Image 1 (cartoon, rainbow, N blue to C red):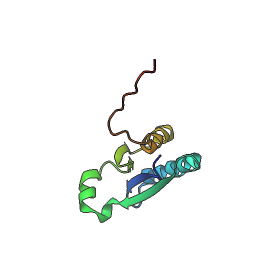
Image 2 (cartoon, one colour):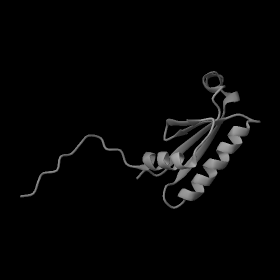
Image 3 (cartoon, one colour):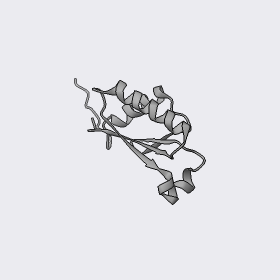
Image 4 (cartoon, rainbow, N blue to C red):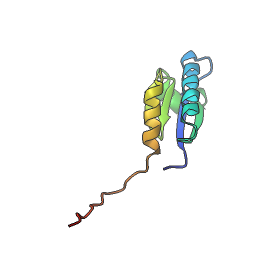
Length: 101
């Protein structure tokens, strides 16, 4: 299992949906404590012109393990599943098991 799963929140000051997303993320982190370690990175899109252009109408935007997960509203059950999926080890190629006689 990975050491941690990064949750990235794109937000801006004064955004009530961003406040709701923070609350949901904190609750999920608490629920998964001891199972999956997470780290939350919050990015203010007003400090990055590129992100502001890309996501101005979509905030908050949540990424889990580098993949876009949600915009506007964050569903806690879906977030838990995404975090657990991101925490699973990746398989690089398939191994074929031999049958035993």
